[in-house]
Image (cartoon, rainbow over all chains, first blue to last red):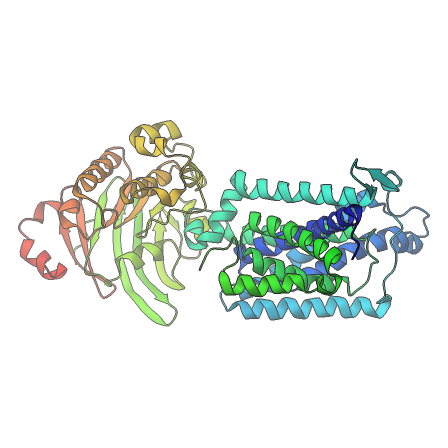
Amino acid sequence: MDISFSAVLSQIMLGLNNGAFYALLSLGLAVIFGMLNVVNFAHGAFYMLGAFAALLGLDYLPRLLGSDVGIGFWSALLLGPLLVGLLGVLIEKTMLQRLYKVDHLYGLLLTFGLALIFEGVLTNYFNVAGEPYSGKPAMLEGAVNLGFMVFPAYRLFSIVFSLLVCFAVWYLAERTRLGSYLRAGTENPDVARAFGIDVPMLRSLTYFLGVALAGLAGVVAAPIYSVSPKMGSDLIIVVFAVVVIGGMGSIMGAIVTGLALGLLEGAVKVFYPPLANTVIFIVMALVLLWRPAGLFGKER
Amino acid sequence: MRDVIDHSGEMLRLTGLHAFYGESHILHGIDFAVRRGELVTLLGRNGAGRTTTLKAILGLTSRRSGSVMINGREAIGLPTHRIAHLGVGWCPEERAIFSSLSVEENLLLPPKVRSDGMSLEEIYSLFPNLWERRASQGTRLSGGEQQMLAMARILRTGARLLLLDEITEGLAPVIVRKLGESVQLLKERGYTIVLVEQNFHFAAGIADRHYVIEHGQVVDVVEADEVSASAGRLDHYLGV
């Protein structure tokens, strides 16, 4: 077997790119689970909706309005997460809110059902094989010479941007007053309420933030992967494995685990490609045997 | 039961307060009132409903009915986080120091409900240990320090009605004495305090009045100056 150094590097960089998406998505799942006690199975669907928001804003909206300029990538980067987040709040306020006091299973079933509905509706109108998103900004076309390798500019952007967002979320949760409310509300909601913290509002805000992150990941993913109703359900299984490995409810755990597993996947793709799609699940099984609460998780 | 309260200057009045945890009916019509600046204790055996009374004031039981007047406002229909903003500070039995927050974050957690709470400087001068350990994880503190933190964090908010639940539980005598001094100081500063206390000696020295709770009802009231005359009666209630 002949493995060149540059092939390894490029797979590792692609792995890092996937890892950045895993981190963005598992981060949202982790904060939602911590604060709302809900295993958000609709997370992949929100990611997919984010990508569709970008696609529709660029191609379909101008056609509908008879205008020749659509919503470009940079605007979509702001509007996509916002729209997805608002949809999330609507769902939280009308449905999820009723399930906090009962078993995790109910929230899981509800969000799973919602994911199937979103996918099903979009499958009616769009090609399951996917549609290309043509809104990649001109300044991110082409490739960049990193010194050790040449790497597509947009992929580099998506890695750096995702990492910055992850860091911002970590900072918000761990270093700000709002973050201390979130942590307190996660740890002991009754006492937080008794201190005058509006926990129901915090939960809505957390869900908004969590699904907006998924929507954001979707917008960032749109120029790389083709936009399809199934794109979320393909990814979310891996992301759940990431969350299980990292441990539910840990923000830093979600970020680090996401990146590390993306890298691992990339590395395995070079050395033994058939294993690449499975390696994360093997790690998951081992971690569950060794530390059932996950690498960064606390025993409950 | 005698009613010795005049209705002016009342900070807290419970009337026919019933509370439930799920299907279990814990409080069966609690009645008592506390005037501004008073310190009253709730005495009784474990399971009599004293902690539940405090939780029911805050709306933390699954269901409650009756009336909870706080500073002249009816709180029975308010959500828990709004009740805190009426000026109620709670020191829960399990202290509830957050392990995911540092000492200072724990201290700064409860939002201010009035502008005249203690400043951080005042709190740190009252509890110097907390200043030294302000960057530690909240639950790394000793039991006594955690109790001080639990007290300190409600003083910052400007709450004037303090609900203190078993604050001396499991602490060394020297720390209990220190806490007694702090509570005395708070009373002198005009705070209204409801104290749930197992340690009757701790409570006897500082309280204006003792309410005895049994089976979720107030069954007796003992004024501070009747304590020695009522020793036999109290021993009977407390089962000592």
